[in-house]
Image (cartoon, rainbow, N blue to C red; front, side, top):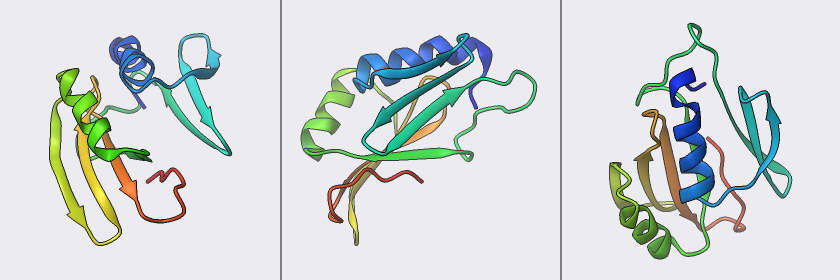
Length: 116
């Protein structure tokens, strides 16, 4: 969950930088982005949940990892973990504007989005 004051900044990141299109918007408190059979949701619950770099994380596969990393850097997105090789994939972790960790992967498994 995202803090109320960070909700629009998060939407600007997920829609403006990542290019996701909202499919559900509930009174500005909850937004879902659907792609195929998957969905990524952001919401706010003031006083209940606080974003932090050790909390929730979402990861999405991208078709061209190097282009995705260059795009994130072009938008001055802060990296928690620079691009690296690991056994199942190449990956990197970035912070969204509310300090929630978002991972970008180039998975080698069936080209399906990964959500952690």
